[in-house]
Image 1 (cartoon, helix red, strand yellow):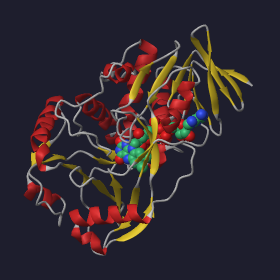
Image 2: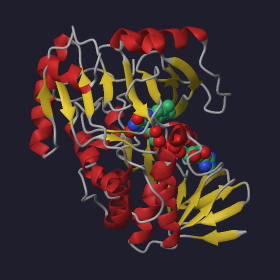
Image 3: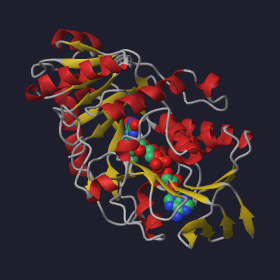
Amino acid sequence: MNQTADVAIVGAGVHGASLAFHLARRGADVVVLERGSVGAGATGRSSGFVRMHYDLEADSRLAWASLPYFQDWRGRVGDGDCSFVQTGFVQLVPPELADALRANVEMQCGIGIETRLVGPADVSALVPGMVVDDVVVAAYEPSSGYADPDGTAAGFMAAARRLGARLVTGCQVEAVTVEAGRVTGVATAEGRWSAPTVVDAAGAWAAEIARTVGVEIPVQPWRHNTAYFGLPSGRSPVFPVVIDFAGGIYFRPEGRALMLVGLETDNEVGGSPDRPDSSMDASTTDVMVKGICRRLPWMENGTFRAAHGGQDGITPDQRPILCQAGPSGFFLDCGHSGTGFKTAPAIGACMAELILDGHAQTADISGYGLQRFSEDRPLVGANAYGMLWR
Ligand SMILES: Cc1cc2nc3c(=O)[nH]c(=O)nc-3n(C[C@H](O)[C@H](O)[C@H](O)COP(=O)(O)OP(=O)(O)OC[C@H]3O[C@@H](n4cnc5c(N)ncnc54)[C@H](O)[C@@H]3O)c2cc1C
């Protein structure tokens, strides 16, 4: 087999699928090569938060440019369903970061994001029974919520295929091929694809793909613990998505009877992305239960249902790498660092513009280049909270 395409994308996670959609709607001949199935990596395990609150303006802009896709999936994408649920979103920070949060809400209002400052009484009205004794001020986004990551990736992929893109699942890319400093395609377990442009959207495996063209990228596997809990009987599932940076935990409703809880702490970085998934151990479950019950004492009567963690690729500044790198025709769309679901629609549009036009228009992604690491210029917010994942 030796087939051809204009662009070969390695990985059919939400980023590979979004990019395939945006390229195909511009008329590019695209193939997506996926060793498992659509959403088999981080995407299928994602908590699906859709919120705009970041301490880095560029991140907030990408999330903001992505929101209309979630709100109007049918109009913007057309196939499948992202199942966006508008619950609202609350960001909590420890008291010493109250001024930074105020400044970040001001920055986001300047972008046009629907967000405002709320006090402890507002927070406990939004999330009944929540302990707010340490809350000085919080951010509230009424139009945010959560979506279904599998549905989002599958919908992007279905729309891309309707527009002519090809998807090959069960196809392991072994190397990107290069001649005279130019990408010529990929070698796979099933044969060769010729393509003048190859995009590395391989999530936790991105560094392995980049290494095949001699490009070292600081993307490491990052393992993240989340779990579903049953809500106590009679508890309403109507509450917002919450990131509790003070407590190192986040949560959101899932359907009518469950809560999804994630830990910002104790995430494992490094190791092989192919090592087996170990289900959450008892001590991690204990940390999670203590964390959620401290913030929501009524969860004492909740029930542990199932662990649902996964892995993503993480960079040293916990921001993605979006650029051309190494041989001509090789692009990086990776290192999404545990927060890349919500930004996938706009990043797909930006990467398609970068590949086809030479620069992105949907949002400014020029700060997400690979050189920032070797030049010691990590991306840091003007009013930084510190690392999200600790
Ligand atoms: C548990 C968890 C919770 C998260 N929660 C949120 C959240 O609430 N909100 C948010 O915005 N983000 C969240 N994230 C982050 C977000 O899910 C990821 O950033 C995003 O899904 C990454 O998508 P991707 O397409 O880059 O990678 P992936 O979804 O990992 O896709 C990469 C794909 O590449 C394939 N692949 C790898 N190597 C090869 C190869 N050699 N050949 C062929 N195919 C290959 C893999 O099989 C995989 O399907 C979470 C992540 C995790 C793990």
